[in-house]
Length: 166
Image 1 (cartoon, one colour):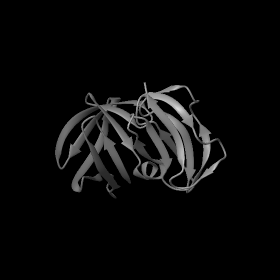
Image 2 (cartoon, rainbow, N blue to C red):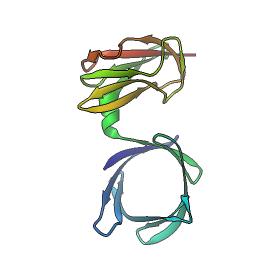
Image 3 (tube, rainbow, N blue to C red):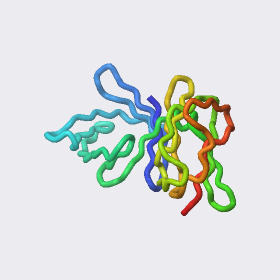
């Protein structure tokens, strides 16, 4: 399983592979670690053994794909959904313009024109290759233009929406 884990300062590629003995091999930016994890009394406290060294981690889920681990907020991103979802361009006035990365069909609209949206907030859902991908705004701002509607098919490069900074 391949993932991207992002904090405010950094983004890393992570590959996790389950081993027959129940342990995991975790590769972070290409460096491999043997990992074993178990809960300790409470579901939000984990005992983690990395390459034979034990530590404890506090993990709290904030929402879909967002966690606080030992006080650090992390986003877990499926790189396939990122790649399929959208590409972005920022215009000279700072507006965020999302375009489809590949052909797909709009299955849901999650925000209305004129609505304020936050960075990371879903604006629409694009189905591509039988996977639904939430397309998010990359900036805080106002949804100025929604350029698609539910049921519409789009090609790679087609514009989806524009968010202007507030």
